[in-house]
Each structure stands twice: as C-alpha cells, then as structure tokens.
Length: 147
Image (tube, rainbow, N blue to C red):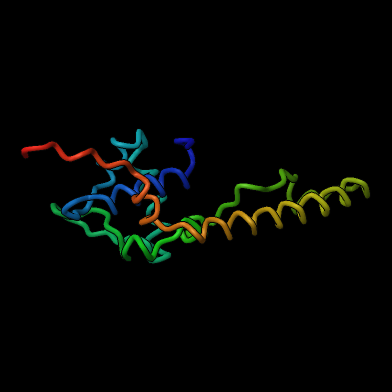
C-alpha cells in the first residue's frame, strides 16, 4: 500500500494495535517511526479515527493510542468513512469556477455518477472485511519442536 495515504497509515496502525500481545498503547512517535511518517501526521490521522470511536488515546508517560473497539467490530469501511476521503473523484475546478461548457457539464455529471456507483461498490466490499479478518491472514511462524 502507498505509504503517503491516510487510509494506508490508518489501517496499518490499527492492525498493529490489534496484533499487540499483550495489548498496550502506542505513541504517535512509535507509530511514526514504524511507518516512516511524521508523528504530527499520525496524530491528525488517528484524531479522525478517535472522533469516529475507532481508537482512544491517553496522555502521559504510559499513554498512547489503543483500539476503542474489538478488531472484529472495526471494518475497513469504518476506517474509510472516518477519514472522510474518497478514492474515486473527479478533479474539478470547484464551485467558485463552474464549467461554462455544456459538454463539460454533461461529462462531469456522467463521470461523477459512474464514480459514485464505483465508490458505493468499494465501500460495500470494505464493509465485509474487519481488522480481525486481516490479522487472520497474517502467517504465523511455525512452532519449534521441543520448545
């Protein structure tokens, strides 16, 4: 996954939080160091997840970020929605500068409708996968005999 994506950072961090045994908080610095991301970016991204009830945070010496719900109850769609971004979107000039060309307006309407449909399919698919499902796909080392 692309490392400069908030979605990628969020999923990677949540999976690490879910996989920690025993569970413990991770600081923004630890997450940033592991993911190669500035801790400020980590805090901004996880702050959005906190607003959506996916993570919690504690300040202080033993503080950090933890999951607010079990991994089985957090879907990839929950994370996607919490970040409030879309993968599929048209690059338009903005409402302050609407297209003057009738053809451009028609194209935008058709393409945006198709992208909305694709986005709905994406979210539907993401809603079928939980963090626990992701963790179940991680190969575990084989036990060593005699230990």
